[in-house]
Length: 189
Length: 383
Image 1 (tube, helix red, strand yellow):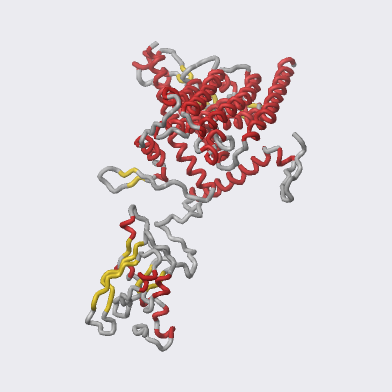
Image 2 (spheres, rainbow over the protein chains, first blue to last red; image 1 turned 120 degrees about the vertical axis):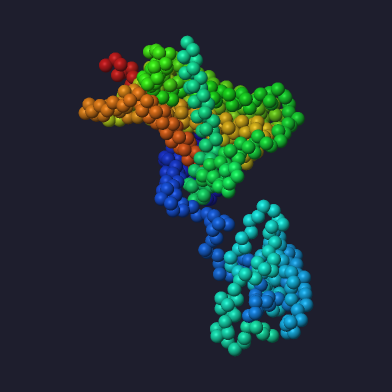
């Protein structure tokens, strides 16, 4: 063997100890074996020895505060959706996942148009948040939690209006008049 | 005579059962151990549902092995336009069968005396008379030689598979497998020769019995304490024989897809995988037999325990037998998980490094080890 010469400025040259291979192998095995024993001890004592989140049974606690996750439809105080079925979100959506069927509601003269059907196909949604930005009524928002999606086929990844409206408006700090100021939540315009 | 046949059949059934179980369970152990040592959970979704109930048996994903086997059995057996049909069909079996044969000479327990074991049943006592059997399928004087003979056969399977597939990847994998396995066979044989010099026999049953004593009064007289270098060399060479990381060049996924069995699908490919997993168990069993005292616990013999200070604990024959079998299986399991630890810790060699490692590093070391042990044994004998 000719003497090893470094060909690159950052080429590492191994010491004799490292080149004799076996000590470094033992060191590597100690590290991996140590991690194994540590995690195994945790599992044996009924604690979790992994960093994995066991989705969908568990959800991560460390989503960013402004993470774009599941969509919610904001409700008025009477429980109806704030959406006026203007189709702006469906228009702006780059993945074309929002489908809205508009209907007429004569009981509410201030908001005569409402979505009879509002569905999002999560199998194609790219979570870009453009629908939220496009909405003139602040009717669609995104929670930081991701939707519980796992399904065996794409047809089961559609979420409809009923599921999108499970979010409680009374818990929303933005909806509390005392915190937000003079504007009352029902009349945005 | 018929008694011998009956006992032999029981032993064969036990050996095949143990090997198949190891083959299935090791697929799961490998995934789980890899997952746990990298902070993951690992495969745990497959389950068996009890019929007519909603009870799902998940058992930490233990049934993933079954699911794998099922998948392999039910998949299409794709037949490529192979170069040699006969060789292509034969190769998986030539790889698989010798692996099973090796276990025939490995003693998996002490001596069983059926007349003592079935004391309560006069019929069986009369039938067996004063026969005694060591727990070993084939009690051969040339046990260790048989191991190497059958170990060498699996090269033929790999070469045949690669050559007959008619694919460049397969051929490259087969060439690599051939040169690698032949090189490491030499190292393996030489490292074990040191042990043969120490024990003076190649009969595996005899080798295990020689390891039942103690060394210096406290150490168990296991081969690993007589021949520590040979143990390391043997384990290294055996890993290379088994074509596992860090010596997995014949099937290097990133370069050769799956190496010599690229063109195989369904259960034919499954046989290659299964053979590999059983070979882990075989290597572990061989290492246990040669270096870890086989079925021996420290201070234990066929009658019970003899602790230092001449304290003797006598155990019934059945208890001793079960202890020995369980101890052997436990040691084999430990060595299996050690091999898996190695597999998930070390990076792969480059091909030139692999051959240089065998011929320029391991071979001289094995020769030196043999020389030193031969001289030491000669000096101790002549004293």
